[in-house]
Length: 195
Image (cartoon, rainbow, N blue to C red):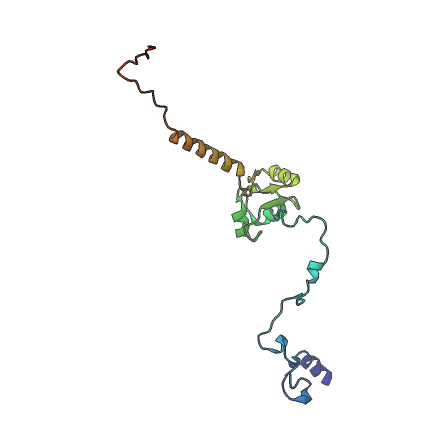
């Protein structure tokens, strides 16, 4: 039947060919308008660009505090996933989790949660554990090791000033001239006569 043919052919729509005469509906300027940057080849504009005026996202007020810059994003792993992917006595760390396909990479810290049950004995090393996950892993005969979190590098201005003061003190100590003893004359001084 014709409707069985058209429902398949209707899925593929031919693209609109521009610049094919006035009768096509997109002739002459081909829908680009007259002159200006938009009519030239290679023209592009980023989203939300508003010309010379201040963009909308800069005009609206910004209030409050956002923790998105400072928050820590964890790779989440449940104990049920450990049960499925590892055998008894295995050592589970970030590298092993990546190899097992439970996390994507080792860039973010790993947190183990207690969803599901675990019966195999595993030695799990991660950055964080929920209390329930710790109890379940230890109840199964396994062990839990918490990795010491890496501290963010912060410039220590105090130590820099202290070292500068010590350097200055050492320099002054080396450049200070030694006190010279008074020169002694061999001939004794004679008192002046009062004639």
